Length: 316
Length: 86
Image (cartoon, rainbow over all chains, first blue to last red; front, side, top):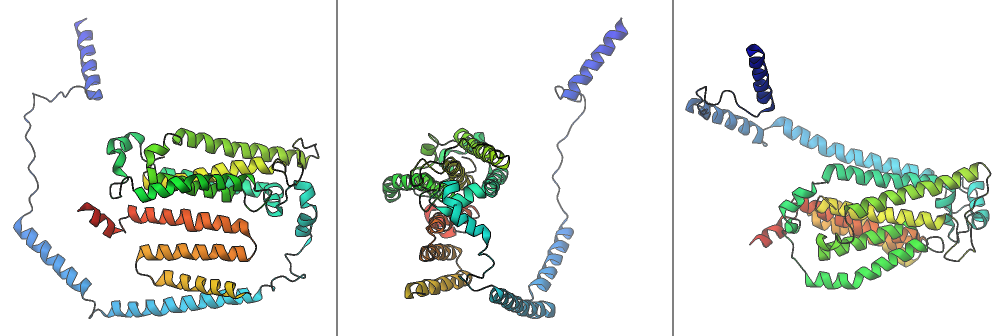
C-alpha cells in the first residue's frame, strides 16, 4: 500500500516537472548567476589588428589589380551584352510581317469568325469583350485566379496579426505623414465619388463600349486607395474590412467559375443555354458577359486595394 | 503617323532613357508614371480605349503608389522622415 502511494506520488511529481509546473531543484541546489563573457585584452588587440589588416587589403582599391581588372571587364561586358541584345531584338522585329496587310498570318479564319459572328453569338457590341469573356472565358478565368493567388502570396509574406496591429497603435502606419491633410481630404472628397461612379460605369458598360471588368476594377481599386490615403484605415474599415474582403473575393471567384462552367458544359454538349442574349446595345444583354464582368471587377478592385493595404499596414 | 503621335513616341523614348539615368529613386518613379501616361495617350491614338483606361489606372495609378509605399517601407525616402521628426 505504502509503496503504491509512493510510486503514485513520484509519478505525479514527475508529471508536474514534465509539465513545467514545479522546479524540483528549487531550494535544493545552490545556484549562482553566470558571469558575462569578457575577452582578454590580448585577444581584443589581436582581433583589432586582424580587422585592420583585412580592411586595408579590401579597401585598397587603387593598388588592387584584380579589382581594377574586373571593374573594367564588367563595364565592357555590360555594354557588349546590351548591344547584342539590342541587335537580336531589332533583328527579330525586322522579321515580323508588316502591319496591316491582308496576307499576314494573324488574319486567319479565327478572327474572321469573331468579327462576322461575334455580335450574334455573344450579343456584345464590343467585340473584344465578347471574345475575351465568351470564346476565351476559360483563359480569363485563369487570369482571375492568378490575381487571387498573387494576393494570397502577398498576404503570406506581409500580413501582420490583427492583435499586434492594434497594440502598435492606429497611427503607426502614418507616423511620418501629415494627419488630416486638408488639401488631400478636400480633393478626395470631390474625386472619390466620381472615380467610383466611373469605375462602376466602366464595369457595367463593358459589353457596350470600351472597358470591362479589369479596367473598371482597377479604377475602383485606385479610388479606394485614394480614399484610404486621405482618410486613414479606420474610416475604410467601417465598410471594407477583412470579412467583407474575403466574402467579396471568394464569392466573385466562385460565381465566375460557376457561370463559366455552366456556359462551357452547355456549349460543349450542345444543350440549350438558358441565359438570354438580349437585344445588342441594351445594358441587360450579352448573356454571361455582364455577370462575369461584375465578378472580375470586384475581384480586381479587392486585389488592388489589398495590395496597397498589405504593403502599407500589413493588414486590411 | 501624325505629328502628335511622333511627339508622343519621342517623349516615350526620352522617358525610358531618363528612368535608367536618374539617380534618385523618387524621380525615376515619377518619370515612370509619366511614361505610363504618355503610353495611355498613344493607346487612344491607336484606337484601343480599353487598354488606355487600364494603363491609366494600373500603370500610372496603382503601380506608382505601390512603388512609393515600398520606398517608404525600405526607408529609401529619407529626407521626408528626417524633416518630420524635428
